[in-house]
Amino acid sequence: MVDRSAEPWYPIAAYLYVLHLDGPALAWEYLRRNPDYRREWLRHHRRSDAAHAWGLHLLEDPARDARDAHPVWFPDHDSVLQLYPDVDPPPGAVVFAFWRIPGHKCLLHDGKRLLLLARWPGSCLRLALAPGLADGMAYVHVLRASASVGTLQRLLTAWLEQRAATGSAAPSVLARSRPTPAALLELHTLQALDATLAGASLRETGAGLFGVDTVAESWYADGGLRSRVRRLVRRGRTLMHGGYRRLAQLE
Image (cartoon, rainbow, N blue to C red):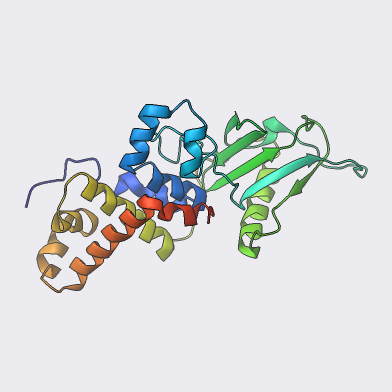
């Protein structure tokens, strides 16, 4: 077995950020690994019409992972919170204050509206700002009617965290519960996908994910570990070749 320990996909620490990604960010992680998409970016990265086939408003640089990329999905994911001016605000209404939103902020225009992405440890807000909304104006926030109760709860939690920050810097350290099985599945899937794209065998992939000693003890023809790695690789390829659309709610 080739020693793969020096390759970028091998250390699991490189994938820990995946544990805190939501659906749209995970969708980007799979899409950006697609070889056809990477070639599309090299050929047409300045053309918006080429992006629609991939479910994007604009092509995004696949060299950027979900911590730095700003993909704009078409249509919007349910987690996008739309802000509009309040035409009849009550006394003391909360006003829009751009600089009081915590975390790292990115503004971009998709050709129709201004979008704001704000990230801080453990949280992410995607805001669509209506024309006419200005700093200091009272506002209302709108969520698509198709959004699930779980999406609404997550958004309201993030929004309350944003409001509670009251202009102070977002915390650099945040206590969090143990990763969920679903989050660990995405981490292992992406790591296994990267391993196979780099030419690693199933056994080498298993050693990177679960340790050389574990593979030496549990790797045999019909063993559970080998089947588990095979399923992770298959799942990663499926998500990379179109399955990401489900994560981004494009279908």
